[in-house]
Amino acid sequence: MKELSEVLKDWEAVIGLEIHTELTTLETKMFCGCKLSHDDAPNTHVCPVCLGMPGALPVPNRRAIESIVKAGLATNCEIQKHSMFYRKHYFYPDMAKNFQTTQGPVAFCMHGRLDLEVSGRGAAERPECAFGENEAKSLASASANAVGLSRQMAEGLPEGVEVSAAALGGMGSYDTAGLAVPERRADGSYSVPIRILRIHMEEDAAKMVHVGGAEGRIGGAAESLVDYNRCGTPLIELVTEPDLRTPEEARLFMEKLRRIFLTIGISDCSMEKGSMRCDGNVSLRRREETGLGTKTELKNLNSFKALHDGLAYEICRQAEVLESGGTIYQETRHWEPSRKRTVVMRVKETADDYRLFPDPDLEPFDLSDGFIEHCRAELPELPDAKRDRIERAFGVKRPDAEQLAGDPVTAAFFEEAAAGLSGKAAQTVANLVVNELAAYLKASGVALGESGIAPAQVASLAKLLASDAISSNQAHEVFEAMAASGDDPEKIVDERGMRQVSDAGALQPIVDEVLAACADQAQQYRDGNQKVIGFLVGQCMKASRGKGNPKLFNELLRSSLS
Ligand SMILES: [Zn+2]
Image (cartoon, rainbow, N blue to C red; front, side, top):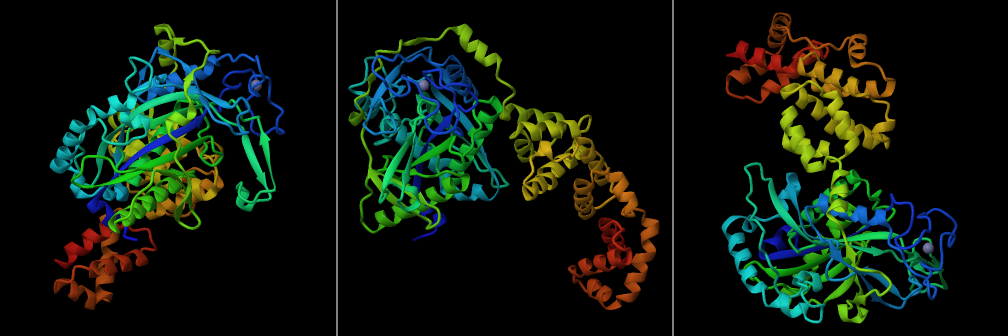
């Protein structure tokens, strides 16, 4: 198979995501008073409603509606005052009532948008031909093709309901109105808007455990057990428009959404435990084409790495099939991380198979302005706003500000450590938090709150660095010692005699000594070999027992040799 970078030169990948998030911070289920709990004995939190007993009547959970409205406001969606619940019918033991209660064409939240900042190595995944004029032409013609089709697909839905093609399976073309053409900046980074089609409310199914089969799958299992504790858990599903073009953009979208949901406190967003899960839709088209190809749906993308690698594999697989004259079938495929491949699970059902109709047991919603404003008032500062504020108030570089703002605990830690600072001093604090602190927490597996490291310690270390009292290599050593002992960096530096010497008068004799001892290298430098300066700085550092300021040694050596 070809490499992703080769494939994306010839083919455009059209990616959409469906992201399910369990509202784990709520007390009770979506339509009954059963406690939300995953850890208790099986089938201990069940009642006639979530078991689908005849005559049992559902009552919507008000706090779940608040949560989804907050999710919509935080992702720039239009909140729909009028929407209703539908029944989506299917016959399987994980839903005792034989239908899932979900939303119809109108969801609580419609037409949102998140802007992605793509930088670093991942930004290179988007090939040069997907920027500027080419991309603008491609978007314009795709948009012209889009209309008619969504009309056609919306037939059979309740009157007055407009749904885009993407909502109904993503076949044909799609409306690109509101999409901006990304421009690549000098450092390779770019930003790109990703539209959100909708966020709707639904309920989770029961958990099934297949016993005796391979890898817990149903194939070959001797028996299957059902735990209805999870059945009826409030779940929100976010569907993006197919605006993502690279696996990296998909990964970043998921990360960004997770940060937002964590910030507004509607879920623990654990991909490991499955409280946040993601399916990816992907199709390919030739660079100059405007219609959409046949898509496949990927399951089991249950980590950021799996999301990226699964999509990357599937893009390369589809390219290989298409280039050898084969056909892509609309099917659901399972990502197998251990074998690094996707395999067919089933051919996709169409919307017709579910016999979707409004639930007669649940009244349509008529959300008041007051209710929506109450939800808005409860929103904390969101990651994007926080990033912009940190960038402005502290003069920290944007990518660092983005990383700091991504986690509320980290952001609060930084703001305390950098209080009253700006410019170089604040950037030094940011560097320590983003690099040293993050690496330490990752290696030790400890959360920031439990690490025992105080903002004041990092501030004091930053002060030593910013004033050139210690080098960045020494800062690493001091950080490790500080994390281990809890001592203040000033004390560690003094005790270890680490204070860096930045006095030219004190360093010049060492430079003279080294140049006398290394006459050959000195001559090589004078003859034009610039690289040898690194060796000479190293000798000076050795002679000063690591205490000399390497930058100053470099300057002194150059002027002595000129
Ligand atoms: Zn119940």
